[in-house]
Length: 103
Image: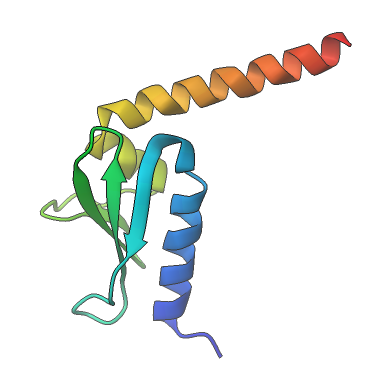
């Protein structure tokens, strides 16, 4: 049986993996103090490191009281360059889709 901690850690790792275009990397850390959260250190495109946790409430950046509903919203709050990378990724996917339809 998978514990809620394992679920949160797997969910956070998967969410961050899907955002590879907008971050330089991440490392999963040990469980949080409450035992029901997953924590990761994220290297942002700016070259700084942010810590993010995932609990049943949502995603939260270290030293912030705000809880985000999605990893995307949390990353946008932490990194202005993430938003730029997300936009570029979307444009590239739409261009690829348009090109494939023209053929």
